[in-house]
Each structure stands twice: as structure tokens, then as C-alpha cells.
Image 1 (cartoon, rainbow, N blue to C red):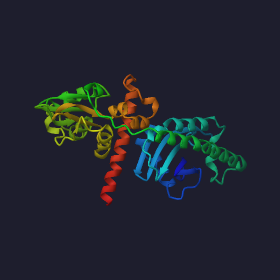
Image 2 (image 1 turned 45 degrees about the horizontal axis):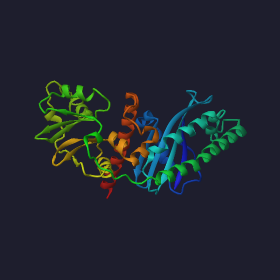
Image 3 (image 1 turned 60 degrees about the horizontal axis):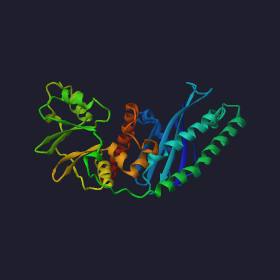
Image 4 (image 1 turned 60 degrees about the vertical axis):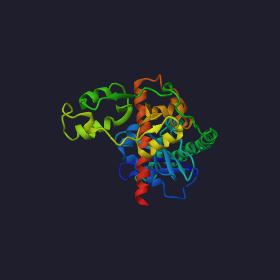
Length: 331
């Protein structure tokens, strides 16, 4: 089932569902979706996906609209496309249509009034009712377009290509020596937002990897001196690896399962390169659809765009990974 839900932040009630179209859901999803307004990490992204299980998936966009009645003269709203029991995972594909919904709401005159139907102190009852009907109509008009997007995306075949040459990989990793200081490694990792991990190689095999999270959690937050800590002290030694002959789709699934954004590749038993979330977006049609057609050519994008893309993809992988781990714990 497909739903479009609009939630808003009521200064008294907190996150509140305004409406769900094309019909009221049979399952209790509205309250769950509206509470996403409380998660600042998602709000900072503006557009984000959230998946609680294989049966409940959402694409969301956060925005603000001018309001003469709100305390800060702004209404905070969240528009969510919700899929219930749908075999469809390309959730980033909905970003453009969500932006179109936001634009349509922005064009409404005094749209904020629609959110005050439960405020009994308001005397503008007829106007509020009219604005509520108008806003519901706007959301309903986008339901067919979302359905068309899903059907069109489903017609794209699964991409089962494999990594054959080094040219198939983008250069988003660095080689580190295990005796380097963490400070030296951190400088290299920070040299470009496209660099996701550093690999420690011995005898042509990866023996460890390190990323920005390792530096933050194992050194900075532990109040250790990065000049005194070596890479080998904090690197992940149980390295998840794939073979160059593994299908890209399987590699992406592995990354989602493990909650990782990059994985070393072996060819004939030796280090060949690193497959990253950027490679997934660059090579795999499913993943390209997942993040939207406008991000298909990421190799020439500005650094700020790349940072946003990395954050979106990494957020998606972390959400899926976290939810799968929760499901395993509940079994």
C-alpha cells in the first residue's frame, strides 16, 4: 500500500499528523511517522529515508512554511511517502516528487491555517476548513505521480554486473601504514569528502581498515593523543572483503547488512581496490534509481554535492543496518 502523509509540529501537542492520502491507513503508521519530526539528525538532512522493517518504508522531506499564527512565524512540516508491504527499496527516487509537493504547498495562500482545525480558540472556522480541504487536495493530486514513479522503477532490470577492471572503481580510499600516527591518517582521510576509508595492506592483502568514525570514537572521544596512537591500535582487523567476481548487487546487500560504507576487493586473492557507496551509485542501476536520476553522474559534482550524497547514502545504509540488527535481536 502507498500513502502520502503530512505531519506538522504543534507547539502544544508536539508532532501531529495532519492527514494521510489517498485513504486512512488500516495499520497504525501515522503516529510513528510524525515522531520523525523529533529526530534532529533527520531534520538536518531535509530529505531522508527511514525504514523500520521490510514491511514499512518511508521517504521524507522536512520543510518550513510562513505562518502568522506560529510562535516563530514558521510551521514545521514533514511530508512522507510511506510504503507498507511493498517489495520496493529505491526510496531515494522520491526526492524530486517530494520537492514538488513542497513547492505546491508553498504556492498556497495561507496554507498554515489548515493546521489549526483543532484549535478551538480560532474564530476563522470556515477559512481553516477551506484551507484544510485545499491542502488535502494538493496531496491527493500527487498520489498518481508517485504510483507512476514506482511502476517505472520496477521495470528497470536488476543489475548484476561485476567489477572487472580498476577503472570500474572510483578512487575513494587511501593506503595507510599501520605504524602511522592517527593524526597523519586523519589528515589523509580529511583531504577529500570522497575518501571513505584507509586500508592497511601487507603482502598484498588488507589487514585492517580505518575510517573517520574510528578516529572519532577510539581516539578523540577517548581523549587520547592522536600523535601517540598508531593506526594499528584502532584499525578494524576483522576486515569484511569481497571478490571482484561478486555481483555488485550482492556487494551492496552485504554493505547494507553490515552497515558499512566501503569494502575492500580481492582479485586472485590479492588486494584489488575498494568498493564504496559511490561506486554502488555509479555502477548499479538499482542504486542509481535509489538516489535519483539527477545523481547518476557523481564523478564531476561539486564537493558540497558529494558531501550531501555521502550523507544520504550513509544514512540509508545505517538505517537499514540498524533495523535489520533489531529484527535479529527480536527473533
